[in-house]
Each structure stands twice: as C-alpha cells, then as structure tokens.
Image 1 (cartoon, helix red, strand yellow):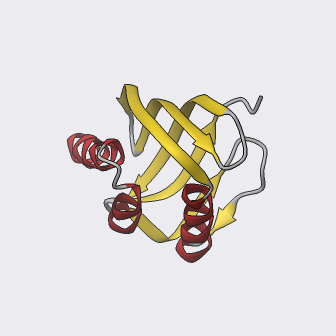
Image 2: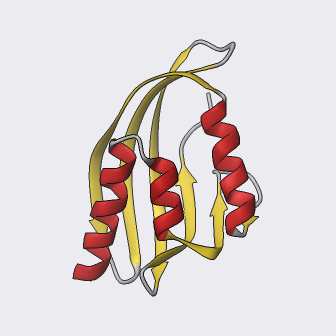
Length: 118
C-alpha cells in the first residue's frame, strides 16, 4: 500500500499545483476507464484526455482546489476535494467531490467521481 500512497500523494500534489494534465499523462493507464456520477463510463486515455481538455477549456476562472482528505486501501485510493471555479457563461460554483481511483502497476486504471450536480 505504501507505493500506492506515494503515487496518490504525488498525483494529488500535481493537481493542487494546477498541473492536472501532467498528472493525467503520468499516472493514467492507456485503457483507463473514467466515470462521472451518472454518466456512462468513458473508456481509453484518448477519450478521457479529450473530456478533460473540454472541461478545463470551459473554465473561465479558477479560484482554487483543496484536498480535504485521502485514504488508501488495497489497490484503491479515495480523495475528497473542494473546487471553486466559474464556467464560461455560468455563475461561480463550489464543488465537493470524491474521486475513487483503482490502481494497477502504478497507473490509474479506473476512476469514478462522486458529487451532486445542482
């Protein structure tokens, strides 16, 4: 578990530094599956890279992120986040989210996000 804890800590550090794209390229497997709360899973790094780029491109202003807690289990990590941002043409939003990551061979192979869409 120590290796996954170190990987999770490094990934989260990059996110907090505003280097989410760098973290994605470094830590996510080519066949990664990612899923928003009620959306169907997105399969593959290229598909998920595009989704991430589309989301980050829709942000007009980013006010910050805060890591509230993190936990490590057997091949699985959980991170609880607070985000504060403004999407283009929308009011400022604060989002609380839990990210559940499944790891294999030092890479994230599955990530699911849990949050409420208001």
